[in-house]
Image 1 (cartoon, one colour):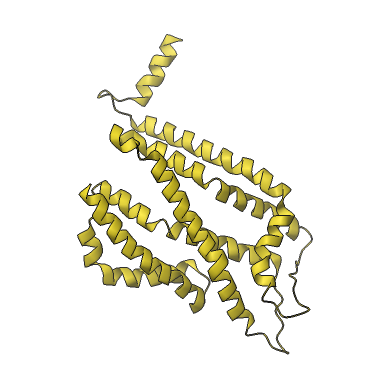
Image 2 (cartoon, rainbow, N blue to C red):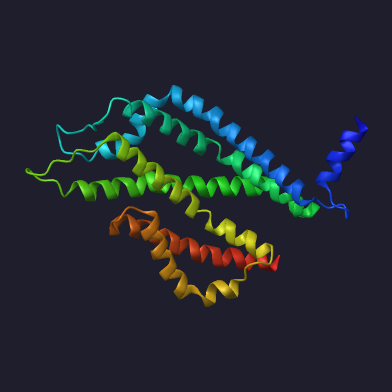
Length: 252
């Protein structure tokens, strides 16, 4: 028993007493297992309420469809079943965001001082809050405006026929993209506190950042200018917030 514990400790710590490379990999595996377990558990709950969730996420599109056409279609027999599974996994991922941020913090906390580890609760709350704001912004602002714009091209000779699979694929990708993009100030604050990013660098390269933001928006969104602009504008505002976050945390 003592020999095994000694071997495990030697694998985790190097001769200087710090965590070894194997130790970091072991810790990373542990955090990934915890995160995936949370996602799977919440996905099971999401699958139970898949019908209600599907009705909720379909509402922004159904509200703007022409009269007598407020419905979507599926083109294969198992399509609805797999959509329910995908939607359940997506709900599990969104619901596990606080757990995922907690596991991220526990992983990087190995290289932090005792005073820095006290930022655990603020980090989880602020990161989860920004991610939630990004998802809510996409769902309540971007979706209604974008769907109304696209459906406006329908006419008497052109009828929208939207498949359930493509719709769920479209909204889940955009919700995750907006949620992650809204983490930009958090990432800037962390990198500045670690000494890897300076406010001067962000200010000096602002013009290049604008070009890069529109390029990223074009890559992450569907091939249309509307959703690209709706993603690029918040990214520009978040970039300015990142500059201020870098200023504050670089001083601290």
